Length: 273
Image 1 (spheres, one colour):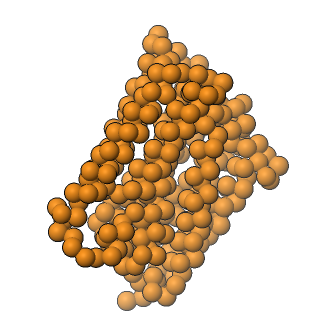
Image 2 (tube, one colour; image 1 turned 120 degrees about the vertical axis):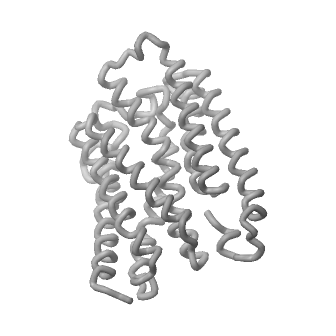
Image 3 (spheres, one colour; image 1 turned 45 degrees about the vertical axis):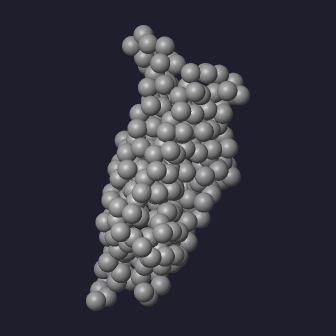
């Protein structure tokens, strides 16, 4: 049964997508401000910390933003108004868009310390959306791509971004690692990111898009540490190992999941992102 709350949810999601795009525009530096990598004294630049991904890694925001905007438009269709799945996902997705815009503003205004709670809450919201996705199934291939696929990319990337963000803030604040070498800390953090990737793969029974985004980010960490201004062979090797492990676990689980779940024919299930 359609209610006024459904219309309110749809409007909130659409407005959040618009604000998210505005935030992305500001974060690119096109609006006259500093790009994220040069804002806050360059604390988030590709060579600021050993965990920072190389610059091209951030191109993943293009499919993420495109998917979120298309979702905001798609969810306006009458069929989605009272859909139980969209009722559960609408506000969390809107919250993620607003949190991402807030994160960009924090960087622009040199409130680097505030980026940590913002991105941690963003990660928590995306985990929430992931749980909702796991608890329900998409009805069409379009929904699989726009919802499951986009949110999977979003979650995987933010996992890497959270690790990089926290590390950048600590380094910027002068944290000395309790006397341990930077390479040691980098390997530990990469290992944790890899374990998170394995956990997501297990929870999602081999879903592809979280693994793709997380491994994309870790791969560019490896590239940056092997070819950039801040070289670190141990960090690069750790990132490569983490990518191999996460991909291997995802592939194995994806192959085994249909048998375990007894999925014999559903088109959407076989295309789950």
